[in-house]
Length: 155
Length: 415
Ligand SMILES: Cc1ncc(COP(=O)(O)O)c(C=O)c1O
Image 1 (cartoon, each protein chain N blue to C red):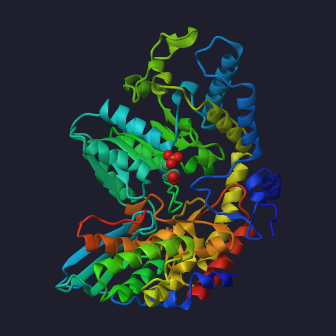
Image 2 (tube, rainbow over the protein chains, first blue to last red):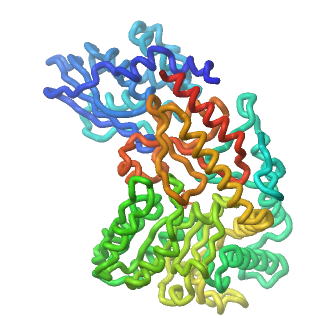
Image 3 (tube, rainbow over the protein chains, first blue to last red):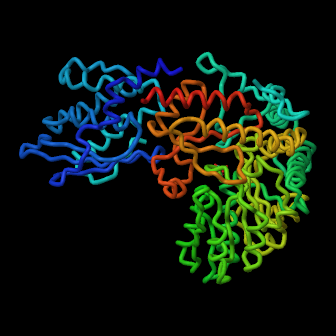
Protein backbone atom coordinates (compact mmCIF):
# COMPACT_ATOMS: atom_id res chain seq x y z
CA UNK A 1 0.00 0.00 0.00
CA UNK A 2 2.83 2.38 0.86
CA UNK A 3 5.80 1.00 -1.07
CA UNK A 4 6.25 4.12 -3.16
CA UNK A 5 6.67 6.13 0.04
CA UNK A 6 10.06 4.55 0.60
CA UNK A 7 11.45 7.47 -1.44
CA UNK A 8 10.30 9.84 1.24
CA UNK A 9 10.83 7.60 4.22
CA UNK A 10 14.20 6.15 3.33
CA UNK A 11 15.86 3.92 5.87
CA UNK A 12 18.27 6.75 6.82
CA UNK A 13 15.34 9.00 7.64
CA UNK A 14 13.48 6.44 9.68
CA UNK A 15 16.70 5.68 11.52
CA UNK A 16 17.50 9.33 12.29
CA UNK A 17 13.85 9.94 13.11
CA UNK A 18 13.85 7.16 15.69
CA UNK A 19 17.33 7.78 17.07
CA UNK A 20 18.22 11.39 16.38
CA UNK A 21 21.94 12.14 16.71
CA UNK A 22 23.15 15.00 18.91
CA UNK A 23 19.83 14.93 20.71
CA UNK A 24 20.76 16.63 23.98
CA UNK A 25 21.19 19.98 25.63
CA UNK A 26 24.54 21.77 25.45
CA UNK A 27 24.84 23.27 28.89
CA UNK A 28 27.69 25.56 27.82
CA UNK A 29 26.10 26.69 24.56
CA UNK A 30 27.07 30.11 23.20
CA UNK A 31 23.90 30.42 21.18
CA UNK A 32 20.46 28.87 21.40
CA UNK A 33 17.32 29.30 19.34
CA UNK A 34 13.86 27.83 19.35
CA UNK A 35 11.97 26.65 16.32
CA UNK A 36 8.26 26.11 16.18
CA UNK A 37 5.76 24.93 13.60
CA UNK A 38 2.53 26.00 15.24
CA UNK A 39 0.40 24.16 12.71
CA UNK A 40 2.00 20.79 13.40
CA UNK A 41 3.10 21.14 16.97
CA UNK A 42 6.73 20.51 15.97
CA UNK A 43 9.09 22.20 18.36
CA UNK A 44 12.82 22.28 18.82
CA UNK A 45 15.55 23.99 20.72
CA UNK A 46 18.95 24.25 19.10
CA UNK A 47 22.28 24.74 20.91
CA UNK A 48 25.52 25.96 19.36
CA UNK A 49 29.00 26.06 20.78
CA UNK A 50 31.26 28.30 18.71
CA UNK A 51 35.03 28.34 18.37
CA UNK A 52 36.89 31.64 18.79
CA UNK A 53 36.97 31.99 14.98
CA UNK A 54 33.17 31.66 14.92
CA UNK A 55 33.06 28.15 13.47
CA UNK A 56 30.60 25.64 14.90
CA UNK A 57 32.45 23.54 17.45
CA UNK A 58 29.44 21.60 18.66
CA UNK A 59 25.75 21.55 17.90
CA UNK A 60 22.84 19.71 19.50
CA UNK A 61 19.09 19.91 19.68
CA UNK A 62 16.08 18.78 21.63
CA UNK A 63 12.44 18.73 20.76
CA UNK A 64 9.60 16.76 19.34
CA UNK A 65 8.15 16.34 15.94
CA UNK A 66 7.52 14.04 13.04
CA UNK A 67 10.09 11.69 11.55
CA UNK A 68 10.95 14.19 8.82
CA UNK A 69 11.63 17.10 11.16
CA UNK A 70 13.57 14.98 13.65
CA UNK A 71 15.64 13.33 10.92
CA UNK A 72 16.31 16.67 9.26
CA UNK A 73 17.51 18.21 12.51
CA UNK A 74 19.64 15.18 13.25
CA UNK A 75 21.27 15.19 9.80
CA UNK A 76 21.75 18.93 10.01
CA UNK A 77 23.70 18.70 13.25
CA UNK A 78 25.98 16.07 11.73
CA UNK A 79 26.45 18.19 8.63
CA UNK A 80 27.26 21.59 10.11
CA UNK A 81 29.61 20.54 12.86
CA UNK A 82 32.99 22.17 12.14
CA UNK A 83 31.56 24.54 9.51
CA UNK A 84 31.90 28.30 9.49
CA UNK A 85 28.69 30.33 9.76
CA UNK A 86 29.08 31.29 6.08
CA UNK A 87 29.27 27.64 5.06
CA UNK A 88 26.32 26.79 7.26
CA UNK A 89 24.27 29.50 5.58
CA UNK A 90 25.19 28.19 2.15
CA UNK A 91 24.20 24.68 3.18
CA UNK A 92 20.91 25.98 4.55
CA UNK A 93 20.08 27.83 1.33
CA UNK A 94 20.89 24.81 -0.79
CA UNK A 95 18.97 22.51 1.48
CA UNK A 96 15.84 24.65 1.31
CA UNK A 97 16.14 24.63 -2.44
CA UNK A 98 16.55 20.86 -2.42
CA UNK A 99 13.55 20.39 -0.15
CA UNK A 100 11.33 22.60 -2.28
CA UNK A 101 12.37 21.49 -5.74
CA UNK A 102 14.07 18.12 -5.28
CA UNK A 103 17.04 19.45 -7.24
CA UNK A 104 20.20 21.27 -6.32
CA UNK A 105 21.86 22.90 -9.33
CA UNK A 106 24.69 24.50 -7.29
CA UNK A 107 25.51 21.40 -5.33
CA UNK A 108 28.56 20.46 -7.37
CA UNK A 109 30.24 23.82 -6.68
CA UNK A 110 31.41 23.10 -3.15
CA UNK A 111 30.41 21.23 -0.03
CA UNK A 112 29.49 18.32 -2.24
CA UNK A 113 29.82 15.64 0.40
CA UNK A 114 27.72 17.59 2.85
CA UNK A 115 24.89 17.98 0.38
CA UNK A 116 25.18 14.28 -0.40
CA UNK A 117 24.43 13.56 3.23
CA UNK A 118 21.25 15.65 3.07
CA UNK A 119 20.10 14.12 -0.20
CA UNK A 120 17.75 11.53 1.41
CA UNK A 121 15.43 14.39 2.39
CA UNK A 122 14.98 15.58 -1.19
CA UNK A 123 11.85 13.41 -1.45
CA UNK A 124 9.83 15.92 0.57
CA UNK A 125 9.51 18.25 -2.40
CA UNK A 126 6.66 16.04 -3.60
CA UNK A 127 4.79 16.70 -0.36
CA UNK A 128 4.21 20.45 -0.17
CA UNK A 129 2.63 20.26 3.28
CA UNK A 130 5.72 18.50 4.62
CA UNK A 131 8.46 20.78 3.28
CA UNK A 132 8.28 22.93 6.37
CA UNK A 133 8.94 19.89 8.55
CA UNK A 134 12.25 19.41 6.77
CA UNK A 135 13.27 23.07 6.82
CA UNK A 136 12.42 23.90 10.44
CA UNK A 137 15.84 22.84 11.73
CA UNK A 138 17.62 25.03 9.18
CA UNK A 139 15.48 28.07 9.98
CA UNK A 140 16.30 27.50 13.62
CA UNK A 141 20.01 27.24 12.82
CA UNK A 142 19.85 30.59 11.02
CA UNK A 143 18.16 32.15 14.03
CA UNK A 144 20.85 30.75 16.32
CA UNK A 145 23.73 31.89 14.09
CA UNK A 146 22.28 35.36 13.68
CA UNK A 147 21.74 35.47 17.41
CA UNK A 148 18.49 37.26 16.76
CA UNK A 149 16.89 35.48 19.70
CA UNK A 150 13.66 35.38 17.76
CA UNK A 151 11.69 32.21 17.55
CA UNK A 152 12.11 30.62 14.13
CA UNK A 153 9.20 29.19 12.22
CA UNK A 154 9.20 27.63 8.82
CA UNK A 155 5.68 28.77 8.05
CA UNK B 1 -19.44 -3.58 0.87
CA UNK B 2 -21.99 -0.81 1.29
CA UNK B 3 -25.10 -2.51 2.54
CA UNK B 4 -27.93 -0.06 3.03
CA UNK B 5 -27.84 0.84 6.68
CA UNK B 6 -31.52 1.41 6.96
CA UNK B 7 -34.52 1.33 4.70
CA UNK B 8 -34.64 4.43 2.58
CA UNK B 9 -31.04 5.41 3.27
CA UNK B 10 -28.96 4.48 0.28
CA UNK B 11 -25.43 5.71 0.79
CA UNK B 12 -24.43 5.01 -2.80
CA UNK B 13 -27.25 7.16 -4.08
CA UNK B 14 -26.21 9.91 -1.71
CA UNK B 15 -22.59 9.65 -2.83
CA UNK B 16 -23.69 10.18 -6.41
CA UNK B 17 -24.93 13.64 -5.36
CA UNK B 18 -21.41 14.73 -4.38
CA UNK B 19 -19.32 15.45 -7.48
CA UNK B 20 -16.01 15.48 -5.60
CA UNK B 21 -16.47 11.90 -4.44
CA UNK B 22 -16.12 10.71 -8.02
CA UNK B 23 -12.51 11.88 -7.95
CA UNK B 24 -9.74 9.37 -8.21
CA UNK B 25 -6.69 9.87 -6.10
CA UNK B 26 -3.59 8.13 -7.46
CA UNK B 27 -5.84 5.64 -9.17
CA UNK B 28 -7.95 5.01 -6.09
CA UNK B 29 -11.30 6.47 -5.10
CA UNK B 30 -11.01 9.39 -2.74
CA UNK B 31 -11.78 8.40 0.86
CA UNK B 32 -12.71 11.72 2.40
CA UNK B 33 -12.61 11.49 6.20
CA UNK B 34 -12.28 15.16 7.05
CA UNK B 35 -15.90 16.24 7.04
CA UNK B 36 -15.56 17.48 10.61
CA UNK B 37 -13.25 20.22 9.33
CA UNK B 38 -15.48 20.99 6.37
CA UNK B 39 -17.95 18.82 4.52
CA UNK B 40 -18.20 18.27 0.77
CA UNK B 41 -21.10 19.80 -1.14
CA UNK B 42 -23.90 18.02 -2.96
CA UNK B 43 -24.84 19.09 -6.47
CA UNK B 44 -28.14 20.45 -5.11
CA UNK B 45 -26.24 23.08 -3.09
CA UNK B 46 -23.91 23.95 -5.92
CA UNK B 47 -26.79 24.31 -8.38
CA UNK B 48 -28.87 26.42 -6.04
CA UNK B 49 -25.99 28.84 -5.67
CA UNK B 50 -25.35 28.95 -9.40
CA UNK B 51 -29.02 29.60 -10.02
CA UNK B 52 -29.05 32.34 -7.40
CA UNK B 53 -26.20 34.10 -9.19
CA UNK B 54 -27.48 33.46 -12.69
CA UNK B 55 -31.12 34.31 -12.15
CA UNK B 56 -31.96 35.89 -8.83
CA UNK B 57 -28.99 37.92 -7.69
CA UNK B 58 -28.93 41.49 -6.44
CA UNK B 59 -28.26 43.10 -3.11
CA UNK B 60 -30.96 42.47 -0.51
CA UNK B 61 -33.23 44.68 1.52
CA UNK B 62 -32.51 47.76 -0.53
CA UNK B 63 -33.74 47.81 -4.09
CA UNK B 64 -37.46 48.05 -4.80
CA UNK B 65 -36.90 46.26 -8.07
CA UNK B 66 -37.71 42.73 -9.05
CA UNK B 67 -34.26 41.17 -8.75
CA UNK B 68 -33.56 42.66 -5.36
CA UNK B 69 -36.95 41.54 -4.18
CA UNK B 70 -36.24 38.05 -5.43
CA UNK B 71 -32.85 38.00 -3.69
CA UNK B 72 -34.38 39.37 -0.50
CA UNK B 73 -37.11 36.75 -0.61
CA UNK B 74 -34.47 34.02 -1.05
CA UNK B 75 -32.37 35.39 1.77
CA UNK B 76 -35.31 35.57 4.16
CA UNK B 77 -36.54 32.16 3.02
CA UNK B 78 -33.15 30.82 4.06
CA UNK B 79 -33.65 32.34 7.51
CA UNK B 80 -37.04 30.68 7.77
CA UNK B 81 -35.55 27.36 6.66
CA UNK B 82 -32.87 27.57 9.35
CA UNK B 83 -35.54 28.40 11.94
CA UNK B 84 -37.55 25.31 10.93
CA UNK B 85 -34.42 23.16 10.85
CA UNK B 86 -33.55 23.97 14.46
CA UNK B 87 -37.18 24.39 15.56
CA UNK B 88 -36.74 28.01 16.59
CA UNK B 89 -39.90 29.70 17.84
CA UNK B 90 -39.41 32.67 15.51
CA UNK B 91 -37.23 33.23 12.40
CA UNK B 92 -36.05 36.51 13.89
CA UNK B 93 -34.09 34.45 16.40
CA UNK B 94 -31.81 33.46 13.51
CA UNK B 95 -28.88 35.82 12.90
CA UNK B 96 -26.71 35.14 9.86
CA UNK B 97 -22.98 35.49 10.46
CA UNK B 98 -19.99 34.39 8.43
CA UNK B 99 -19.25 31.23 10.46
CA UNK B 100 -19.39 29.82 14.00
CA UNK B 101 -16.36 31.83 15.00
CA UNK B 102 -18.14 35.07 14.10
CA UNK B 103 -21.30 33.92 15.88
CA UNK B 104 -19.41 33.21 19.11
CA UNK B 105 -17.48 36.47 18.86
CA UNK B 106 -20.79 38.26 18.44
CA UNK B 107 -21.96 36.85 21.78
CA UNK B 108 -18.61 37.59 23.43
CA UNK B 109 -18.84 41.17 22.25
CA UNK B 110 -22.50 42.06 22.46
CA UNK B 111 -23.45 39.96 25.47
CA UNK B 112 -20.04 39.68 27.14
CA UNK B 113 -19.11 43.35 26.85
CA UNK B 114 -22.57 44.82 26.45
CA UNK B 115 -24.64 43.01 29.07
CA UNK B 116 -22.41 41.12 31.50
CA UNK B 117 -21.30 42.92 34.63
CA UNK B 118 -17.94 43.15 36.44
CA UNK B 119 -17.62 40.31 38.93
CA UNK B 120 -19.38 37.84 36.66
CA UNK B 121 -17.69 34.82 35.10
CA UNK B 122 -17.82 32.87 31.87
CA UNK B 123 -17.62 29.08 32.21
CA UNK B 124 -16.16 27.07 29.33
CA UNK B 125 -14.76 23.52 29.21
CA UNK B 126 -11.41 21.93 28.48
CA UNK B 127 -12.73 20.46 25.24
CA UNK B 128 -13.55 23.70 23.48
CA UNK B 129 -12.46 24.49 19.95
CA UNK B 130 -10.29 27.61 19.98
CA UNK B 131 -13.28 29.45 18.49
CA UNK B 132 -15.06 29.01 21.82
CA UNK B 133 -12.04 29.73 23.97
CA UNK B 134 -10.03 32.59 22.52
CA UNK B 135 -12.97 35.07 22.43
CA UNK B 136 -13.41 34.44 26.15
CA UNK B 137 -9.69 34.92 26.84
CA UNK B 138 -10.05 38.25 25.06
CA UNK B 139 -13.08 39.18 27.15
CA UNK B 140 -11.30 38.22 30.39
CA UNK B 141 -8.24 40.24 29.39
CA UNK B 142 -10.30 43.31 28.54
CA UNK B 143 -10.15 44.75 32.08
CA UNK B 144 -13.87 44.47 32.63
CA UNK B 145 -13.58 42.36 35.74
CA UNK B 146 -14.90 39.28 34.00
CA UNK B 147 -13.44 35.98 35.13
CA UNK B 148 -12.97 32.86 33.01
CA UNK B 149 -13.60 29.44 34.52
CA UNK B 150 -12.82 26.12 32.93
CA UNK B 151 -14.73 22.92 33.51
CA UNK B 152 -12.68 19.74 33.48
CA UNK B 153 -13.11 16.83 31.12
CA UNK B 154 -13.01 13.26 32.46
CA UNK B 155 -10.57 10.61 31.23
CA UNK B 156 -13.38 9.17 29.12
CA UNK B 157 -13.65 12.53 27.41
CA UNK B 158 -16.92 13.64 28.95
CA UNK B 159 -17.79 16.88 30.64
CA UNK B 160 -17.11 16.48 34.37
CA UNK B 161 -20.56 17.44 35.67
CA UNK B 162 -19.43 17.52 39.30
CA UNK B 163 -16.79 20.05 38.43
CA UNK B 164 -19.36 21.88 36.33
CA UNK B 165 -21.73 22.16 39.27
CA UNK B 166 -18.89 23.22 41.58
CA UNK B 167 -17.90 26.02 39.23
CA UNK B 168 -21.48 27.25 39.00
CA UNK B 169 -22.14 27.04 42.72
CA UNK B 170 -21.34 30.60 43.80
CA UNK B 171 -23.83 32.04 41.32
CA UNK B 172 -21.25 34.32 39.71
CA UNK B 173 -21.26 32.62 36.34
CA UNK B 174 -23.19 34.83 33.95
CA UNK B 175 -22.63 32.73 30.85
CA UNK B 176 -21.83 29.10 30.22
CA UNK B 177 -20.22 28.62 26.78
CA UNK B 178 -19.65 24.95 25.95
CA UNK B 179 -19.59 22.73 22.95
CA UNK B 180 -22.57 20.54 22.08
CA UNK B 181 -20.20 18.08 20.41
CA UNK B 182 -16.43 17.93 20.58
CA UNK B 183 -14.59 18.19 17.27
CA UNK B 184 -11.80 16.04 18.71
CA UNK B 185 -13.40 13.48 21.02
CA UNK B 186 -16.73 13.14 19.27
CA UNK B 187 -18.36 13.53 22.69
CA UNK B 188 -21.91 14.81 22.59
CA UNK B 189 -22.46 16.82 25.76
CA UNK B 190 -25.69 16.53 27.77
CA UNK B 191 -27.06 19.86 26.58
CA UNK B 192 -30.42 19.74 28.36
CA UNK B 193 -28.73 19.01 31.68
CA UNK B 194 -26.15 21.71 31.11
CA UNK B 195 -28.92 24.20 30.43
CA UNK B 196 -30.93 23.12 33.49
CA UNK B 197 -27.91 23.27 35.78
CA UNK B 198 -26.79 26.64 34.44
CA UNK B 199 -30.24 28.21 34.56
CA UNK B 200 -30.70 26.99 38.13
CA UNK B 201 -27.65 29.10 39.02
CA UNK B 202 -28.77 32.11 37.03
CA UNK B 203 -26.35 31.62 34.11
CA UNK B 204 -27.23 31.93 30.43
CA UNK B 205 -26.03 29.25 28.03
CA UNK B 206 -24.28 29.42 24.65
CA UNK B 207 -23.88 26.08 22.93
CA UNK B 208 -21.28 25.68 20.19
CA UNK B 209 -23.22 23.47 17.81
CA UNK B 210 -20.69 23.55 14.97
CA UNK B 211 -20.41 19.76 15.03
CA UNK B 212 -23.66 18.78 16.73
CA UNK B 213 -25.98 20.48 14.27
CA UNK B 214 -24.56 18.30 11.52
CA UNK B 215 -24.98 15.03 13.34
CA UNK B 216 -28.13 15.42 15.39
CA UNK B 217 -31.52 16.95 15.17
CA UNK B 218 -31.19 20.03 17.35
CA UNK B 219 -34.34 21.59 18.70
CA UNK B 220 -34.07 25.09 20.14
CA UNK B 221 -37.39 24.92 21.94
CA UNK B 222 -36.53 21.59 23.56
CA UNK B 223 -32.95 22.53 24.46
CA UNK B 224 -33.95 25.75 26.14
CA UNK B 225 -30.52 27.35 25.70
CA UNK B 226 -29.99 31.07 25.21
CA UNK B 227 -27.59 31.09 22.26
CA UNK B 228 -26.66 28.42 19.72
CA UNK B 229 -23.94 28.74 17.09
CA UNK B 230 -23.23 26.68 13.99
CA UNK B 231 -21.55 27.00 10.64
CA UNK B 232 -22.79 26.29 7.11
CA UNK B 233 -19.75 24.65 5.57
CA UNK B 234 -19.82 21.67 7.92
CA UNK B 235 -23.49 21.10 7.13
CA UNK B 236 -22.82 20.42 3.41
CA UNK B 237 -23.41 24.10 2.70
CA UNK B 238 -20.99 26.76 1.51
CA UNK B 239 -18.27 28.58 3.41
CA UNK B 240 -18.92 32.15 4.46
CA UNK B 241 -22.18 31.61 6.32
CA UNK B 242 -22.90 30.74 9.90
CA UNK B 243 -25.80 31.06 12.29
CA UNK B 244 -26.27 32.50 15.70
CA UNK B 245 -29.59 31.56 17.19
CA UNK B 246 -30.36 34.00 20.00
CA UNK B 247 -33.53 34.56 21.99
CA UNK B 248 -35.28 37.77 20.96
CA UNK B 249 -35.32 39.14 24.49
CA UNK B 250 -31.52 38.77 24.59
CA UNK B 251 -31.13 40.39 21.19
CA UNK B 252 -33.12 43.36 22.45
CA UNK B 253 -30.66 43.86 25.29
CA UNK B 254 -27.51 43.38 23.23
CA UNK B 255 -25.77 46.31 21.54
CA UNK B 256 -24.76 45.66 17.93
CA UNK B 257 -21.37 44.04 17.29
CA UNK B 258 -20.41 45.55 13.94
CA UNK B 259 -21.47 49.03 12.91
CA UNK B 260 -22.26 50.08 9.38
CA UNK B 261 -24.49 52.29 7.33
CA UNK B 262 -26.74 49.37 6.57
CA UNK B 263 -27.90 49.11 10.12
CA UNK B 264 -29.83 52.36 10.23
CA UNK B 265 -33.35 52.88 8.97
CA UNK B 266 -32.74 55.34 6.19
CA UNK B 267 -31.89 53.62 2.92
CA UNK B 268 -34.84 51.74 1.51
CA UNK B 269 -38.54 51.13 1.83
CA UNK B 270 -37.86 48.24 4.13
CA UNK B 271 -35.24 50.16 6.06
CA UNK B 272 -37.35 50.96 9.08
CA UNK B 273 -37.20 47.40 10.22
CA UNK B 274 -33.43 47.18 10.03
CA UNK B 275 -32.67 48.34 13.47
CA UNK B 276 -34.85 45.57 14.83
CA UNK B 277 -33.42 42.14 15.60
CA UNK B 278 -31.92 40.36 13.84
CA UNK B 279 -30.96 43.04 11.26
CA UNK B 280 -29.22 44.97 13.99
CA UNK B 281 -26.58 42.23 14.03
CA UNK B 282 -26.23 41.89 10.27
CA UNK B 283 -24.31 45.01 9.32
CA UNK B 284 -23.16 45.29 5.74
CA UNK B 285 -24.10 43.21 2.72
CA UNK B 286 -24.84 39.74 4.07
CA UNK B 287 -23.76 36.40 2.55
CA UNK B 288 -26.68 36.24 0.11
CA UNK B 289 -25.62 33.44 -2.21
CA UNK B 290 -24.27 31.54 0.76
CA UNK B 291 -27.64 31.80 2.51
CA UNK B 292 -29.24 30.26 -0.58
CA UNK B 293 -26.63 27.51 -0.45
CA UNK B 294 -27.27 26.87 3.23
CA UNK B 295 -30.99 26.71 2.53
CA UNK B 296 -30.36 24.09 -0.15
CA UNK B 297 -28.13 22.14 2.21
CA UNK B 298 -30.82 22.16 4.88
CA UNK B 299 -33.39 21.01 2.33
CA UNK B 300 -30.98 18.28 1.27
CA UNK B 301 -30.38 16.82 4.72
CA UNK B 302 -34.02 17.33 5.69
CA UNK B 303 -35.18 15.34 2.67
CA UNK B 304 -33.01 12.45 3.80
CA UNK B 305 -34.18 13.09 7.33
CA UNK B 306 -32.08 13.78 10.41
CA UNK B 307 -33.25 10.51 12.05
CA UNK B 308 -31.95 8.54 9.05
CA UNK B 309 -28.67 10.46 9.18
CA UNK B 310 -28.35 9.77 12.87
CA UNK B 311 -29.02 6.07 12.34
CA UNK B 312 -26.41 5.93 9.59
CA UNK B 313 -23.94 7.68 11.83
CA UNK B 314 -24.63 5.29 14.71
CA UNK B 315 -23.83 2.38 12.44
CA UNK B 316 -20.60 4.08 11.35
CA UNK B 317 -19.59 4.95 14.91
CA UNK B 318 -20.19 1.42 16.23
CA UNK B 319 -18.30 -0.04 13.31
CA UNK B 320 -15.39 2.39 13.66
CA UNK B 321 -15.19 1.80 17.40
CA UNK B 322 -14.82 -1.94 16.76
CA UNK B 323 -12.49 -1.73 13.80
CA UNK B 324 -10.21 0.96 15.23
CA UNK B 325 -10.04 -0.71 18.65
CA UNK B 326 -8.65 -3.76 16.87
CA UNK B 327 -5.73 -1.90 15.30
CA UNK B 328 -2.60 -2.80 17.27
CA UNK B 329 -0.78 0.17 18.78
CA UNK B 330 -3.59 2.63 18.14
CA UNK B 331 -4.81 4.89 20.95
CA UNK B 332 -8.28 6.33 20.54
CA UNK B 333 -8.95 9.63 22.22
CA UNK B 334 -12.22 9.74 24.13
CA UNK B 335 -14.60 6.97 25.05
CA UNK B 336 -17.74 8.94 25.72
CA UNK B 337 -21.03 7.08 26.00
CA UNK B 338 -22.74 9.50 23.69
CA UNK B 339 -20.58 10.27 20.70
CA UNK B 340 -20.71 11.23 17.07
CA UNK B 341 -18.63 10.35 14.05
CA UNK B 342 -15.34 11.94 14.99
CA UNK B 343 -12.35 9.78 15.94
CA UNK B 344 -8.97 11.17 16.96
CA UNK B 345 -6.17 8.67 17.31
CA UNK B 346 -2.44 8.25 17.69
CA UNK B 347 -0.27 5.36 16.54
CA UNK B 348 2.48 4.22 18.92
CA UNK B 349 5.26 4.27 16.32
CA UNK B 350 4.31 7.11 14.00
CA UNK B 351 3.91 10.83 14.42
CA UNK B 352 0.49 12.07 13.28
CA UNK B 353 1.98 14.00 10.37
CA UNK B 354 3.86 11.02 9.08
CA UNK B 355 0.74 8.94 9.48
CA UNK B 356 -1.38 11.48 7.60
CA UNK B 357 1.12 11.47 4.74
CA UNK B 358 0.86 7.69 4.51
CA UNK B 359 -2.91 7.74 4.64
CA UNK B 360 -2.97 10.43 1.98
CA UNK B 361 -0.93 8.14 -0.23
CA UNK B 362 -3.64 5.53 0.26
CA UNK B 363 -6.20 8.10 -0.88
CA UNK B 364 -7.50 8.75 2.64
CA UNK B 365 -7.91 12.38 3.68
CA UNK B 366 -7.63 12.84 7.45
CA UNK B 367 -6.57 15.81 9.45
CA UNK B 368 -3.36 15.80 11.48
CA UNK B 369 -2.50 18.19 14.27
CA UNK B 370 -4.35 19.46 17.26
CA UNK B 371 -7.57 20.38 15.47
CA UNK B 372 -7.82 23.84 17.03
CA UNK B 373 -7.97 22.25 20.47
CA UNK B 374 -4.48 22.53 21.94
CA UNK B 375 -5.54 22.53 25.59
CA UNK B 376 -7.49 19.32 25.07
CA UNK B 377 -4.49 17.58 23.52
CA UNK B 378 -2.36 18.76 26.44
CA UNK B 379 -5.02 17.38 28.82
CA UNK B 380 -4.56 13.94 27.27
CA UNK B 381 -0.75 14.21 27.08
CA UNK B 382 -0.73 14.34 23.29
CA UNK B 383 1.02 17.66 22.64
CA UNK B 384 2.31 16.28 19.36
CA UNK B 385 -1.27 16.03 18.13
CA UNK B 386 -3.43 13.28 16.69
CA UNK B 387 -4.91 12.24 13.40
CA UNK B 388 -8.63 12.65 13.09
CA UNK B 389 -11.09 10.80 10.93
CA UNK B 390 -14.52 12.42 10.80
CA UNK B 391 -17.53 11.10 8.97
CA UNK B 392 -20.20 12.60 6.81
CA UNK B 393 -23.49 11.31 5.50
CA UNK B 394 -21.61 9.90 2.50
CA UNK B 395 -19.16 7.86 4.60
CA UNK B 396 -19.40 4.09 4.13
CA UNK B 397 -18.58 1.08 6.29
CA UNK B 398 -16.17 0.04 3.54
CA UNK B 399 -14.23 3.27 3.96
CA UNK B 400 -13.85 2.60 7.67
CA UNK B 401 -12.58 -0.92 6.94
CA UNK B 402 -10.11 0.56 4.49
CA UNK B 403 -8.92 3.08 7.09
CA UNK B 404 -8.39 0.32 9.66
CA UNK B 405 -6.46 -1.73 7.13
CA UNK B 406 -4.32 1.26 6.14
CA UNK B 407 -3.54 2.00 9.80
CA UNK B 408 -2.37 -1.56 10.34
CA UNK B 409 -0.15 -1.35 7.27
CA UNK B 410 1.16 2.06 8.33
CA UNK B 411 2.27 0.62 11.63
CA UNK B 412 4.13 -2.14 9.79
CA UNK B 413 5.71 0.47 7.53
CA UNK B 414 7.21 2.35 10.47
CA UNK B 415 8.22 -0.72 12.48
C1 LIG C 1 -16.62 22.60 17.71
C2 LIG C 1 -16.24 23.67 16.73
N1 LIG C 1 -16.45 24.95 17.05
C3 LIG C 1 -16.16 25.95 16.20
C4 LIG C 1 -15.64 25.70 14.96
C5 LIG C 1 -15.32 26.87 14.07
O1 LIG C 1 -16.07 26.87 12.91
P1 LIG C 1 -15.78 27.98 11.80
O2 LIG C 1 -14.33 27.81 11.45
O3 LIG C 1 -16.67 27.67 10.68
O4 LIG C 1 -16.02 29.29 12.43
C6 LIG C 1 -15.39 24.38 14.59
C7 LIG C 1 -14.81 24.03 13.27
O5 LIG C 1 -13.70 24.21 12.92
C8 LIG C 1 -15.71 23.35 15.48
O6 LIG C 1 -15.49 22.07 15.17
